Image (cartoon, rainbow, N blue to C red; front, side, top):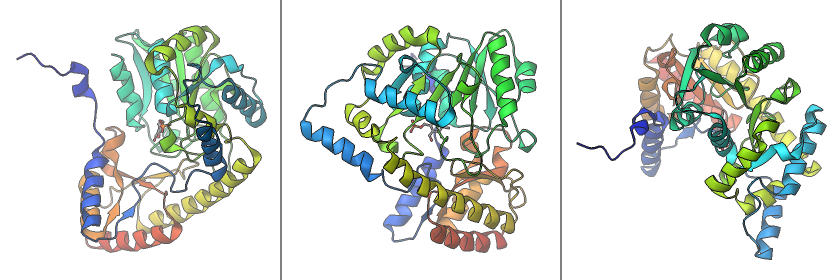
Length: 388
Ligand SMILES: Cc1ncc(COP(=O)(O)O)c(C=O)c1O
């Protein structure tokens, strides 16, 4: 029988954690106390300065389309941020406001992928990025990575797996789910290799800002011939506003603009106005306090999980995740996550949401909840694993 579903849809993976989440909600309705450590968004509210900037624009009643590339003022502020924060000069013409990092990567792929093109990426990685590649009839070639490379790709890996079909590579640093940064020299080598091959390099920098005790370089420090994907979602606490940005190489500016006009006309006007306040000194001061809190949470959770016997060979440098090896307790991390939720009301994300390489031996813990709540979660987790 003729299938009315597009063939590509069968290759798109669902979020396995959603099943867990819906069970968690069911348990909460029954009155159970659930500690959420599966959620990939900050528990903090959007900074008031940003909310106020949005309200101010809303009150004018003028919420019209912006130019497809975004408000000029916002693009300029992002360009200024690159100059101030990374000491790199990026022409604002190369910067596009997008509906989150998701919209940024979709736009970048729309501008650069042909059917059959292959992009190299790490396994484990953020699943939507590889699904997006499939949506454009490309192929995500996932290369297994482990602690020896900080769960990141290397130039050697790229060279070894580069084929006729390879169009480029995607690197997310800090990574979701591992929170690890790529070493700056390895990052540079990867970019140079892709540039030398004439390919496209996509740098997912959404967790920049949420880096603890180190600095994450932007790919733009090493080359102008890169796509940089970023967002106001995580560090700026604006997940639901759906606003991010994309930096494209010069040669892609015109095409990207044409595509943005066609695909989404413009990014949410209200959210763009709100984001104008994101780089204000007062906003950044507040975000730095939050970053300090995330650092303390990272340290607390890392120590607690290691104490319980989870293996975490590389201490994460950023994002708000710890990807822990649970092989000591189980060979089925998905089942463990389900059982832990039922028995103890602690929700975490199974490794299989992020790929297939040793996924069944890994769990992602998000420290998007307070240290007090995590302390209770760790007591419950200890009781649970003592019974295994
Ligand atoms: C690595 C990575 N990239 C991109 C995204 C998409 O973020 P958004 O579209 O909210 O900006 C996420 C969200 O969790 C992520 O973890």
